[in-house]
Amino acid sequence: MFPFMLITSLFFMWGFAHSLLDILNKHFQESLHLTKAQSGAVQTAAYGAYFIMAIPAGIIARKFGYKAGIVVGLLLFAIGAFWFVPAVGIGTFGAFLLGLLVLFSGLTFLETVANPYTTVLGAPESAARRINLAQTFNALGWICGPLIGSLLIFGSSENSNAALMLPYVGLGVLVLLVLLMFLFVKLPEVKEESPQTSSGVEKPLIRQRHFVLAVIAQFLYVAAQTGIGSFFINYSVEIKDLQITTMEAGIWLALGGMSLFAIGRFCGSLLMKKIKAETLLGSFALMNTLLMLIVISCHNVWGFGALIVNYLFMSIMFPSIFALGIKGLGEQTKTASSVLVLTIVGGAIASPLMGYIGENNMNYGFILPLFCFLFIAFFGFWGSKSGK
Image 1 (cartoon, helix red, strand yellow):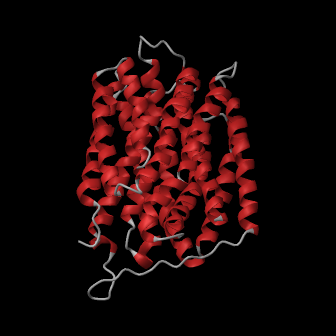
Image 2 (cartoon, rainbow, N blue to C red):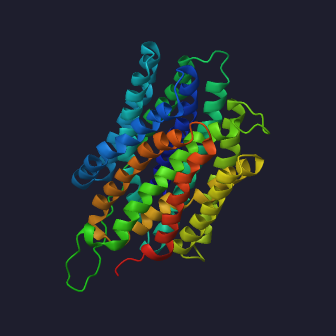
Image 3 (tube, helix red, strand yellow):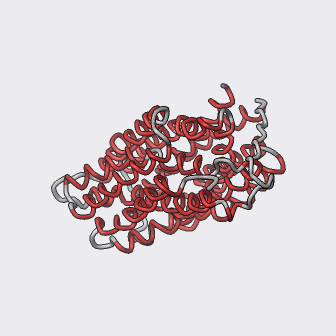
C-alpha cells in the first residue's frame, strides 16, 4: 500500500508542473509580447522532451529497474525547476525554454516508470481502475497548478518574469523531499507476466493492433488536452460578455475545469467497477466531441461552459488509453510504456498549430481537439481490443 501512495506523489507533481504551462503560455504572451503561435513554444519545449527522453527512460527502467528511473527523473525535475532562478536573471525566452526542457525530461522518466508500475501493482483486470485512482492525485496537481500560478504570477503588481521564481523554487524543494523518500524506501520490483499466445512467442509490438492504435490515440489525446489548456485563458478573456481578467480566467481553469477533471478521475475509477474501461473511454470521447462543437460555434458564455465541462470527460482518457494499450504485453510492457510516453510529443505540435489557427478567432483553433476526440472514441469502442 505504501509504494502505491508514494507513487501517487509523482502523479501530483506531474499534474502541477503540466498545469503551470497553461499559465506560462499566457504570461509570456504579455511579458515578452509574443503571438499565440510563438507562445506555443512553451509546450513545444516541454513536450518535445518526451520525444527526446522517452526511449532512454525506457532503457534505464528495463536495465536498472523502476526505482532507478524514478531517481533519475526526480533529479532532472529538480534541476529544471531551480533553473528558473538564473533564467529570470538572463531574461530571455530561450532561457526559460531550456529550464522547461530539463524539467520535462525528468517528468518523462517519471511517467515512463510510474504508469506501468501502477498497472502491475495488483491484479491485471483492475489495472485501468487502479491507474485512474492513482492519477486522481495527478488531477489534484492540475487544480493547484493554475490556482497557485494565477495568484502568484498574474496577481503580481508588476508583469515581470521574477514572479515565476516562487512557484518553481517551491516545486523544486518539494521534488527534493520526495527524492529523499525514494532513496530510503525499498520499492518492490514487480515482474510482468508474459502473455499466453498460441505459438508461445510474444508478437512484436508493431503487430499488436491494440498497442499501435493506443499510440495514435495517446498522441491525439495529449495534443487535444495540451491545446485546450494552453488557450483556455485566451478563449475566456476574448468573450466580451464575460469581461474577465487573465487571473480570473486562471482561477476558473483551476476551480472549474481542473476540479471537474479531478472529480472525473475519481468517479471514473469507481464507474470502471461496473462499466468496461473501453466503453467508458469511448462514451466520454463522444461527449467531448459534442462539447467541442459548442466551443467552436458559440464563442460566448455557452462555449465557456462547454469548455469547462470538457475537463470532466477528458479526465479518464490518458490513464485509460495507457492501461488498454499495454494490456497483455508481458515483458514488453516497459518498452511499450516508453513508446506511449513518447507520444506526449503531441502536445508540442498542437499548441503552435492551434495558436496559428486561432490567432484572430480563438474558437476556431478548437477544431483540432474535436478531431482528436473522434479518433479516441473509435479507439475506445473498437480499437482497444487486445489479442485479436
